[in-house]
Image (cartoon, rainbow, N blue to C red; front, side, top):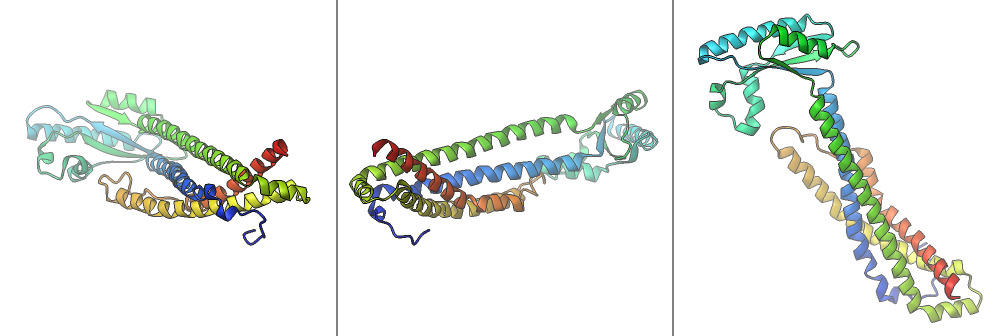
Length: 298
């Protein structure tokens, strides 16, 4: 394709030289948006797996002085743990220690001794049976009747909101990818028509000596393929370090929510083939532009 003889001096066409520099940022933006879709989908899936089959019971700190509050809260925790471990569908229930509570709050409030003096609520980590999960409505009512200050969180409220938000972002990213593809096609289309206007005399001579439309279209298509591929490679070269930098930055964030922020293999493959996709799109668009223009001019 690249070594085919050309009767059109397209290499000297100044209008085609800017095409790689237009394709490069488009491939870059498309790659970032596409990577965002894969990363966000993987992140939501990981969060969903982490909270599936788990519940959290929160017990408010009892009133009174520090010592009395701690003792009464501990009694409520022991009562709740016993109730949970005997409830149908619960595999295991264990209370988090004060050190574990402080470790959970440390990323936001700092690892300070002041945290140990605060009247923190007690938390109970509950694991449910996958084959026969508990009746959450009955469990919530039982806790409210038996243990003062107890509340049940099944994580589904905030997770469902998070999933809805992520799906909206994914659709927005897909729309951006489609928009970029449309802009790229339009750019190649009008660049090809401009090139045909510049070489119109040569094209007319080729037609007079019997050159078919497809022969002329193939030369413009080959040229568009090469230029778009060059631009796509440049855009990809800019994308890879950016994605690696995002992953490194996410791993350094506190809290652990984004520790696994990475692009899966399918995501990397999708990003790596973008230059070839852009080149094929440019080739097909250029061919279509030539055929449509020749049908009207000649």
